[in-house]
Length: 236
Ligand code: NDP
Image (tube, rainbow, N blue to C red; front, side, top):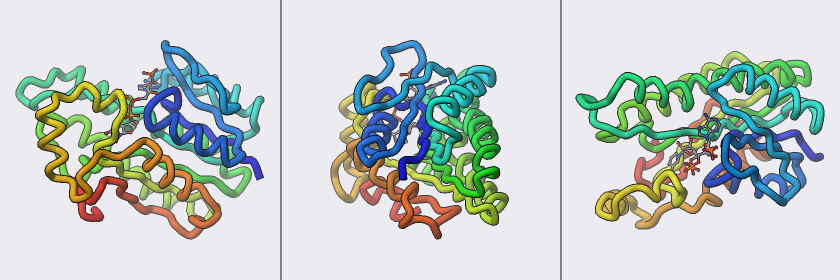
């Protein structure tokens, strides 16, 4: 049956790949976009929303509920980087990354839980990163936020399991999107050398893991961290 699926940051990159895959599978999919072009086609409902603004998040949920019904699958995917070595990292860069990548996930999950509790079913999927477990020089803010998502998701798994709501994390490795297109070639080469499968992920590789965790086949999986990283984290 078509479910109401809400994916943040679904206008490009990994989020768009997830949105396309789930819409093609028959779900009613809504995605956020901010200032850029809304995504078109695939029957996807674009919702203008900055996830760092609680009022915009509330308005997004209201719109989705009116168009598609209460959110049954939440994919907290939107994220940013503000890389820099610790000694040179301004406090606003640390705070901005925590706010977008971690605090917004709390905001979204809390709002989604309302409808899921009522329905006594739901799926939450948080997009973390291999960096959450490995750490990365120049990404202390990002790694802290992404590691925070794991503790957050596992706590929700414990809080909400008895209500048939699962909460899981997908941890992608290096994936070809706008986020990584800005990395210097030398950096990409060095990162590739550490990946047993020797290549970057395609956004569709991450989407397939999300689709699985949202599917009936994954109904007994909660509190998990599923790496999709070409082996770079060796299953961590
Ligand atoms: P992109 O930079 O390609 O896209 C980021 C998405 O997040 C965009 O849709 C962007 O919207 C949205 N976004 C950012 N901030 C906000 C905000 N405040 N409110 C609403 N939307 C926002 O990233 P990727 O597709 O590569 O990454 C998706 C997720 O996967 C992120 O959480 C990222 O950390 C994670 N990830 C990515 C990896 C990679 O190698 N690419 C590896 C591991 C994890 P807009 O277009 O409006 O800016």
